[in-house]
Length: 69
Image 1: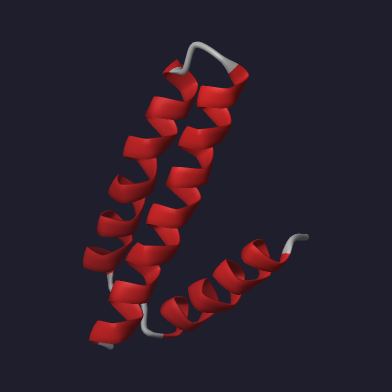
Image 2 (image 1 turned 45 degrees about the vertical axis):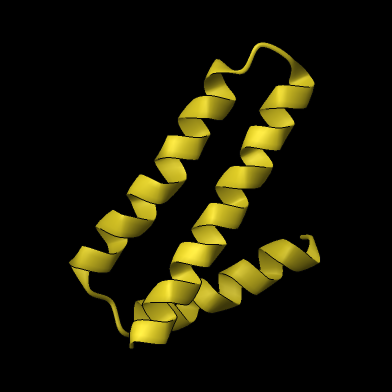
């Protein structure tokens, strides 16, 4: 597992400790928008960039939720 994935996993576990369905919807929507772009990408390079954006957006959304808690 990469460092970024481990960092996201730790944040997500903190998020789950204070689980609120409103936050889950926000996280899922943020990730799914970028994931959809990755699926529709026409080249491997575009796909990887979209996946990177999805991961970054998801981590940022988790950070926002953790900041609110």
